[in-house]
Length: 111
Image (cartoon, rainbow, N blue to C red; front, side):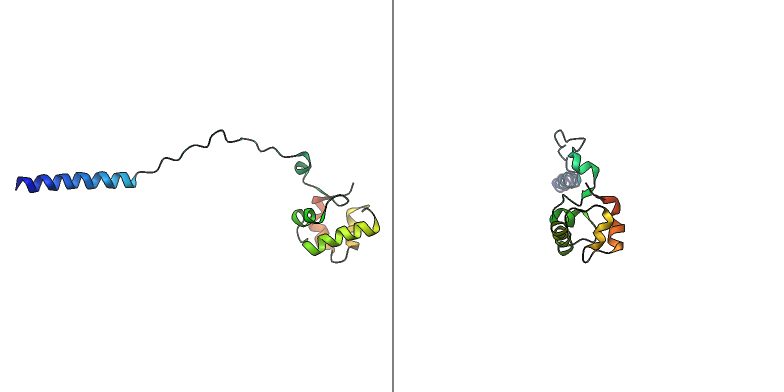
C-alpha cells in the first residue's frame, strides 16, 4: 500500500512539473540594437511627386487613382507636349479627371 501511495505522489509531482514547463511562457530574445530612427532620403521626406521628373512606376505607386495605363499616359503627354507648367495641366491628359487631380493635388508639384 505504501508503494502505491509513493508512486501516486511521484506521478502527481512529475505531472505537475511537466504541465508547468509546458505552460511557462517562452523567453523571446531581444532584438540587438534596433535603430530608433528610420532615415529617409530628402526626396522621400518632402512627399511630393514632380510631374516633370517622375517616371511611370513612381506615378503609379505614389498617386491614388493612377494605374499603369494612366501613369504611362502622363509620361507620354509630357514627352509629346513638353514639361507641365502647372498641376492643373494634368487635366489635359486622357483619362485624368478633376476628381483624380483634386485627390492628389497635395502630393503633386511642378518644377
